[in-house]
Length: 109
Image 1 (cartoon, rainbow, N blue to C red):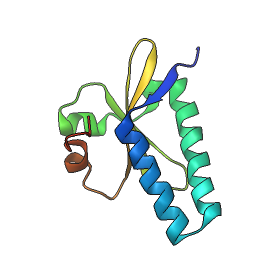
Image 2: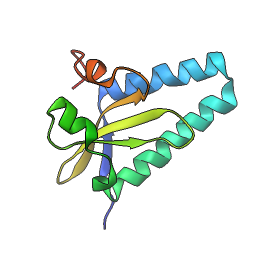
Image 3: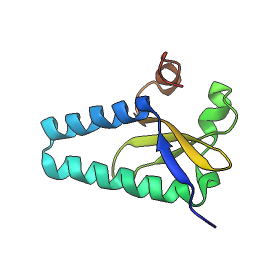
Image 4: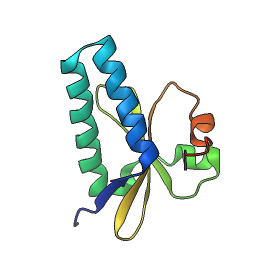
């Protein structure tokens, strides 16, 4: 299977910037770099078998096609939708946050 392009939306990039800033301030550079590495690995994973992500939040939010993939060693989820030619990354959110509320934010989708 050919890998699809993974294209984060502006809001997903803001989520990542926020997480990196938090890890830099609270845990240091090594942890922030580890987060970035885990995110890159998650993007690489969803590029090949996108259907492996969980559709649980799609049902909760009534957003057909929405899937989530967890980062390894970090409590974040990558929310995305697969299209024929790319993966559309909507958000990268901490799993303990109010996911439905965060996904409903004006720039959330």
